[in-house]
Image (cartoon, rainbow, N blue to C red; front, side, top):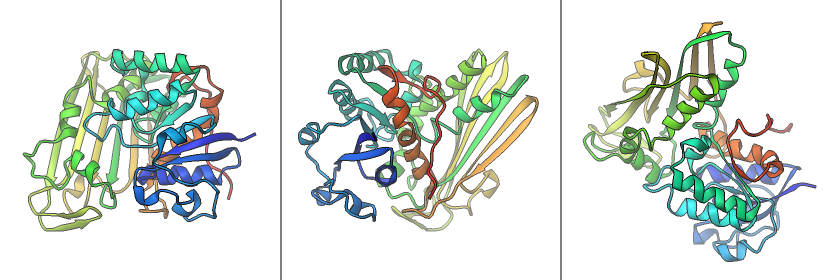
Length: 352
């Protein structure tokens, strides 16, 4: 029997998730939550260019929670809002208490549960206990490239001296204006950046949690985590999906987290996000992830991704598929908050 799934949200990520759930034989779409009133009553298949499913989109959460389902795949915005532990957490706890397992890309802190604020973790655990349910958070980063991948490659290492991972992403086609402003794109360099504010506090940054997950898995004792942010501005007008970025506004940014162990850099996570390749191209361009493990053996791994779906942003697709592919494992798991290290190894994708 397929697992019955409610899809929650149909934005950049949720649209990919919805399409995948409809197409899979081991999953059955039984409900669809949308936020845009214009989508109310539209068949789920129509929203993603597929044949009718008989499942109509709704903005009525109370009605939706009368639906029998094994799991809710929750893709509403969370981390990229000013308060990820506000409405998104309220929704998720309500779902867990109501007896639904939840897979989600919304709150990146969930990737490494020990990093959650104590009061948040305890609230989620109470909800899981009340509903007998499981919560799993994942994505491409955190959730895969910057944590699960190095952990996996460490399994064939004799010794590791250091790990350096770089993420390079083009944000030009991203259509969520609120997220882009949250990240500081199209803003003056001295404008307040919620992204920079979050990452400057190591106790709030999702990437601190990701780095600590790697450290815990491979046995590094991190003494300190250092954070830096560099940026470069547009030199001429740049038109992107959310509008125009003017000269002097942020067009590229690079952030680094360096975990210090034994008095030296041991784990480095570097992120280069840009809306154009013409500004500081020497930093790195394209949609790719590069991992260097120095040790015995020394390894270098590069992953590139592309898709022709929707806005042709592979990151949105991969963020969507990490939770979707985990649904069967999550539904079979014991109640509680799970990380990728708590669940059996699973695969993804289907032959077409």
